[in-house]
Length: 137
Image (tube, rainbow, N blue to C red; front, side):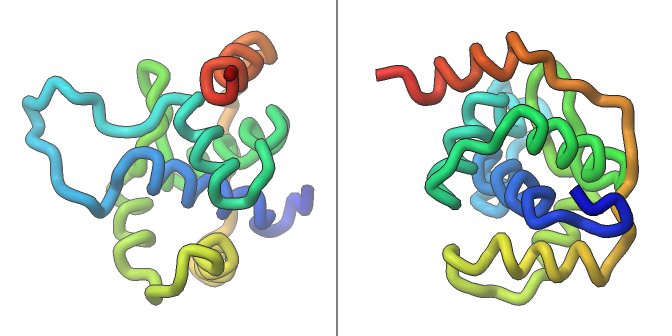
């Protein structure tokens, strides 16, 4: 992982949070019972659909640390969510096809702000359980 700048996997995880959490489809009422955001299993399933690969635990952990530290993503009660800054970044991106969205977001992240750092960790057991939940037959 290149410490000085954003990795492509950071953009991959960011886009997975966006799409998995349904950002952009509609605005949810603040008092809705449906949680906003995406659980880890949903994030992994979305990431796999985007790139035909399951991100490794370390890729998810490092990306979330950098995205969270840059105030683009939060993790609360097991749900990954966009922050207002993350939503703005997503909504103001140039539109492109789904196949190029990760590359587009990587370029935007690289131009817009440096990656941050947070102490968030992803336990191996939580990652393994999410993989089983998302991909079990």
